[in-house]
Length: 120
Length: 110
Image (cartoon, rainbow over all chains, first blue to last red; front, side):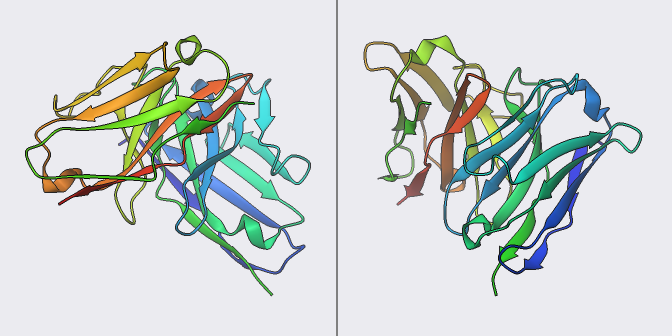
């Protein structure tokens, strides 16, 4: 079954760090363009980072540039997001999502999300 | 970069038709594909339209979408509204290696 499963969320103090993981099953993650997308409580979807299938193109939203790092472990078929210097406004559900699959460039597979709460 | 602007909310009665707009602030709406996602409370989004007007298998043909270059906007139309269509809907596009989501529209089926 083709699916994504995020983990690593939790409660962290402002200025702290957290590393999210996204395990892929049923497909090879490195064959696809992968993204992290977040959703603050009661708010809309916000794209924050993507990595190309080759791994050679990585992009970040301005809101996280310099603080977050996306990476991929092809042996473990997993995607990661290292988050440093966390702020209260980073509190959100974080989703990993696949593109370049069944629906062209659309995000066709999403994980269930992992909650990150930044609070003292 | 550009923004995608959607109405905050729309509402309509069961059986009726509703359209949700998505206006691109700069750049040509037709230059990059537009996708539409449906998100029910507590769930991850699912794709209801991709590549401007393509419907994934399993999505009812009550869902359709189009692009209008004159208004630089995309539109999602849902006909024969059903209670199960009540959800948040997001448009999404990209440019310069950046993905952009609209702010989302809450659809209420009265």
